Amino acid sequence: MNYFHLLLFCSLSTYSIAQGIRVEGKCVGKNNVPLENVMVKTKETIVQSTFTDSLGSYFFLINNVDTLDLVYSIGEFKETRRILLKLEKTVQIETIYFPILQQVGVSIIKTKQNPFEIEKMPTIDAQKITGSVERTLALTTAATSNNELTTNYNVRGGNYDENLVYVNGFQVFRPFLTRSGQQEGMSFIHSALVEDVRFSAGGFDAQYGDRLSSVLDITYKTPEKFKSSGLLSLLGVESHVEQEVNHRFNYLVGARYRSNGYFLNSLPTKGAYNPVFMDGQFLCNYNINENLIFSVLGHYSSNNFRFT
Image: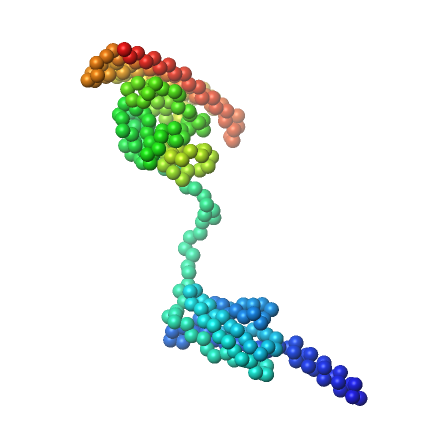
């Protein structure tokens, strides 16, 4: 009989210990407004943190311990309490006060699916380009140039070689020149063939390369019918022809000739100046299907420097 009583006493004690103690309380702000989502942390529970509900109330269960350390936090505010527990099944914690008038909810007005997406480069209207594309950049964008006789430009003080230039996806490398300015040849970009101009002075897509200053992305025209143009001046002549042969094949052809002798001989520096520059370009596109186009871009250039 004594053995049975001892076994019953141990079972009840074990059940009482396993049942634990319920701790509950409330958090309020100014004017006793209940505060929601206040974090309540303690090391004496299996789940070491809980949050207050819409009424500012919270509760959790702990094992039988003598001392309970609580940490309350919301935003930048934090409160701590040390509670000496008594042998009770429920412990009521005094109301915790925070100097907050009310909680401000956050409304999500617009979401962005890809926050790391780089926006497209700004476009320059090709119809407003007069003369060379590079000169237009120096007048309308962050690019600068200190010489009217050159097509070179710089961005944030860098060298011209730090700028990327693409034509229909082909990267264009600057050819070797004697020097910039009056002894410089023509730009690679043929203005009569240009349809779209995009320029970025920084923050461009990695597909363009790893140079630091800028990227100039030129798109040549896609012919829809036969067109031609010509330009005659005292310094040279330009012309171009474009045509769509059929729904699969089209081409662009451009040619330029320039002689700066008439202009250079008017400069104060005496000498015989008669440099002659000419080039030709062609772009052929063959549409294999809706998603695949075979393109060939060709360029011929002749720079004859005649200085004595």
